[in-house]
Image (cartoon, rainbow, N blue to C red; front, side):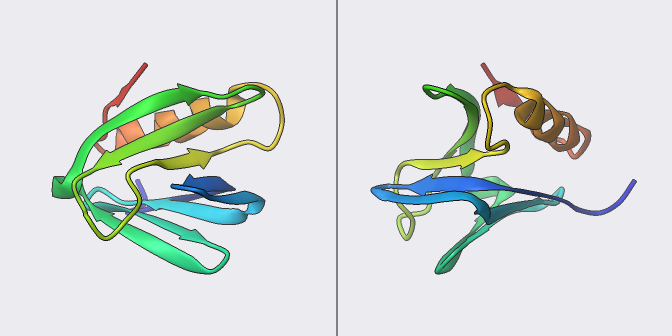
Length: 104
């Protein structure tokens, strides 16, 4: 098994919306790293309060609930640019292999 996994997508950080494909979530057993056009966020596993499935109007996102005051309270990552959940399911599968639990 590789030590990290990356997936291209879109992101929402507070009021900032970064469309697909201008974001990338990199997952390792130790941390999540979200890079996006204009910045990045690093979430060590101990700073992550919860990971949740977030249903949007046309897609499904990963909601990262965290304890880092340096980042927006609302952090979403869309794993697919089109309607459906296949990108999210792939992301969830890879994250669970690395020890993360995603709640519905």
